Image (cartoon, rainbow, N blue to C red; front, side, top):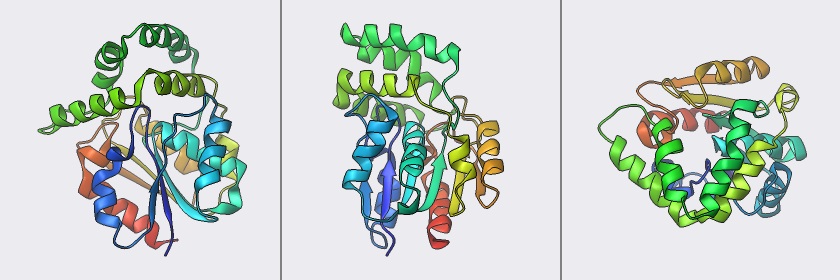
Length: 231
């Protein structure tokens, strides 16, 4: 059986993948790895590699996808298949980069809940009947992880490298997936990744924003299952 390593997005944990873990854990060994203990992408990726199986399928959402690309850069022979969801292969643009410092300062003053509520959570989801419940879960995960993780993750995202060449060099089974209404990592970013990996399958999840694993769990799980069956 192919081991599956799942990497959650910023200020999220394994609860981000709860529907997928429930659906797939009877068939695949699954490991969800926290990504908040260091403040560079290189160190975060090395930490995951230290606890991952010798070879594995790798799926990451948002920041988890960015860490996944760095893992692929560091250890390409260990990655049997790659799933990138609602993420971005490019270095951070200055418009976003300039906001990181003030956000870190606010969080270190005790305003994590406010920063998440006002600057991050509103961008996550499309409208839908479960929007409020999912936003509440996002806040719960963020508050459980705390300001130290927020600071580390913000610095790692701010200073991340462009991974376009990493993707060009990957020839394994690949899935590129995103919510149709994702405003943080739009469809165009996923079309770019699909172009960089011509062998990849591009899946656009309708009626979903940045977190299709929770917004449209059945469709997302089905796409991941098709990808895993290719490995």
